Length: 71
Picture 1: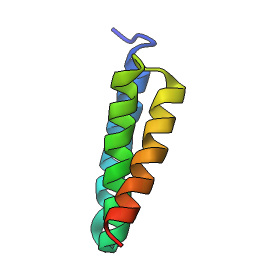
Picture 2 (picture 1 turned 135 degrees about the horizontal axis):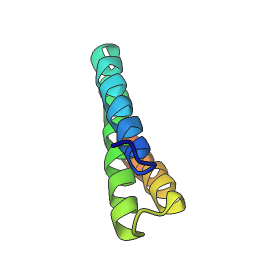
Picture 3 (picture 1 turned 90 degrees about the horizontal axis):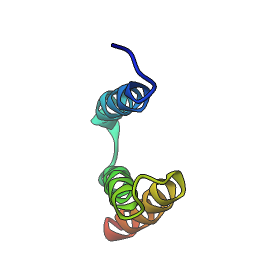
Picture 4 (picture 1 turned 180 degrees about the vertical axis):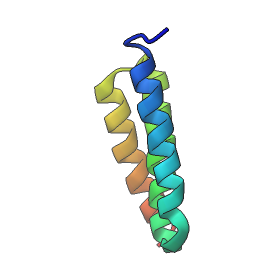
């Protein structure tokens, strides 16, 4: 059965698939930024109960941290 709740899951799965395909030619710093943004998004979503602002904020903070660690 198709529900509105299945749309975000499908989008997330698609984003992960395309994200993995795009990592082939990335530098180590770009990979660190992407991994940090992904981890930050997950952490932000968990800490804020799935709020969009928390997810986006977590991705931004995680991306910056991942970028700086691999400098």
